[in-house]
Length: 403
Image (cartoon, rainbow, N blue to C red):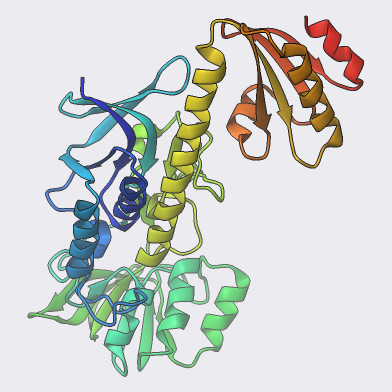
């Protein structure tokens, strides 16, 4: 069993390494576990990176090397492995990660940053020309095809919206659609935008059989699904928009996911499991970019730090305290709460085996949710760490029933 970490980040892409920088700089003992030989995630496979603020021009690998160097500066530890299982202690605080090779790591919090991979169709030439004319991100690569002709594979919302976006840069977009003429999988508004755009053309009832080229993409071979006829179409690039696949198999059934398998998080990047956070492309989000993943990482790291502080304070003040702890759930806007706290402090004065613990329900939502506190003031008496009596205070005189 390894030493205990404050946070373990699963995945060394932009989101994971951003979380690493913020966590380690905040003096958290931090480990990033990455299953690939090199860190960087999908960004490390992008040939050019021109839309990350402050970085006028760099390749994806260069930018990710800078992320890694930043992590190194603050002492982030790295380990290689594929996390296959997460178990949580009975008290919900200590988490144990197990890799596919049987290695185990213990931590107080987890940030899932495993990302999502573009769905690969396995077309001949798709892998060979990735980054050399085959792209999975119009926002990243559109300006490299200025005044050129490109092909888009797909007909859903993403494919249609990205095709419209591409027309701001390219000469022509040809969408390859497997459905009959006029049928797209996108919503009505997106379809209307595509059909009204004179830079977008459609090839119906067809699929891409092969992506052709030399050092770069020069064309595609198309197969008509009804006639079986093979035709060739010259193009300078192929954009694949047939979906992405999140890497969440190891947390299915444990953390709440969308039907598509993406992790559901709130504004603090918290999952439904206290102490487990998720960032970047693995989450259910609007825009999947390096800059948004980095922002997620910063939020999650700070939220994880606050979570640990909250939990450790609870353990020290309540669950590991051998005496009686009067836990008052309150918020600063409640005058009744303040009166209750004042009365408790008077009652416990000069009693070394009793203490008053205040829980601000806004700042400590995990603790409040754990005890189903939705309104304040509420006081719960704990004897030697065990809940003994609860009072939802309507009248301050009710506090007498706690003793």
